Image 1 (cartoon, rainbow, N blue to C red):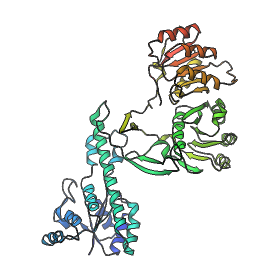
Image 2 (image 1 turned 90 degrees about the horizontal axis):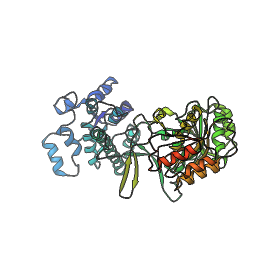
Image 3 (image 1 turned 60 degrees about the vertical axis):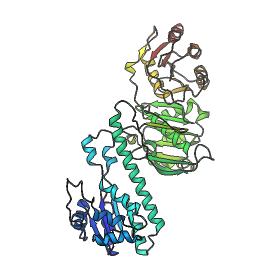
Image 4 (image 1 turned 45 degrees about the vertical axis):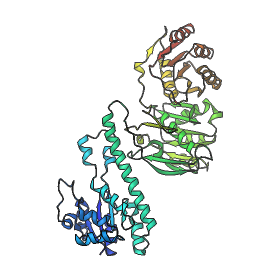
Amino acid sequence: MRKALLSVSDKTGLVEFARGLTSLGFHLLSTGGTARVLKETGIEVTDVGTYTGFPEMLDGRVKTLHPRIHAGILARRNHPDDLAALKRNDIPTIDLVAVNLYPFEEKVHGGHTPLDEAIEEIDIGGPTLVRAAAKNFEHVCVVIDPADYPAVLDRLKKNTLDREFRLALAGRVFSRTAAYDAAISNYFAERRAGTDLPETLTVQLKKIQHLRYGENPHQRGGSYRLLGHTSLGILDSRQLQGKELSYNNLVDAEVAALIVRQFPGCAAVVIKHNNPSGVGTHPASLKEAYVKARDTDPVSAFGGVAAFNTDLDPATAQEMTKTFTEVVVAPGYAPAALEALKTKKDLRILEWRSEHALSHVPLDVRTIGGGALVQDLDVEPDDPSHWKTVTKRPPSDKEVQALVFGWRVCRFVKSNAIVFTTTDRTLGVGAGQMSRVDSVKIAGTKMREFKLEGRPLAMGSDAFFPFRDGIDEAAKMGVTAIVQPGGSIRDSEVIAAADEHGMAMMFTGRRHFRH
């Protein structure tokens, strides 16, 4: 009689799979909780301890680590010496192994699990069993994912459990155990690292979607989930309509969602080529917030990505249909809003809730030739109460409000980043220029005849001004307050220029380059 060993943490589909195996003539071996579940449902099963003559011990740490188990799995059926060794020792072969591992990744998700708790979630017997079975895939079927149970049963019934299928299952085992060990390695590396980056960083990614192409049609593209993290921002969005997402869609949607999450009330952003072309807020009207964001730069808004921090209402949806948009991202949609948006057949509609954001933020990894650059993600909020006024005139309360708004936006603009804002919206954005003064000039050209109605015109800069020319240009455009990190050897000249123009200037002490 063929034997199958079942020992699973995830009991999904277990009973149905076990019943299917017994109906096909398999004798079942099992351990601990798995054996208990099977016996409670009336399925005949032999405990591994009974089978080996050696009881489970050390609170279950030692169960399947026994020659009677592993010899039965590893024996090569086409090697006479292997079969003779089994016969001498009265060891039957084990033909199928279904095991999934302790949920280590889920247990340590969040980064705050104590070491003693994490250690107990490190599976020893499970990886050993599946690796042994995968190594001997020529003669043993190994199943590590409950999703594969139906296919395995079907092939067993039809006698089509061929080599190619067993090889594919074996490959999944080694991918899973590699990811499992990587998660454990990274957990220990983080504990050792203290305030430094880990000496060894293991990244395991699982493909979740094939993209039509990368940034350009001649480049392959795909989206991957970082294993060990249950939530990854925009990758956890639900697509409600539209054609397949592109690489560029996802890159833009991610930064759009990050920007609007920063603002209270109703907030909207329009992204174009990974830069915000406009951001708008309103205490109660999402439509008004969107109009402010779109009208900062209506030309650039064409073909952009729009994101919102509150559920999309019908009035905002109707307003959106006036402008061609590639992607819209919101935490939810009123039925009438969704109906209005769906009149645009090619519009990609994504539902993404801000609570999906990671509580434990992973490192930012960028590949370069022969390796990678690694840094912390720049997501820590800034505290305006720590900013320092460096000019003779301090900013007014309204100017501070405008400066805070601009600072929230400019950290997401490609360097050199300049953002003109008032208290509730962007008025002009200059991005990605080689000199800061050029970014100031470009931001100025984006400004139209906005009615400030007594509100200030503020300027945010992601890094210091190396010369006073940027301040002089801003003064010509009517800027009254500036926020920047400071730190230039010419800070005194820049401050003096602001004083000459009667401006208020604040230093944050922290820059936000984004390349």
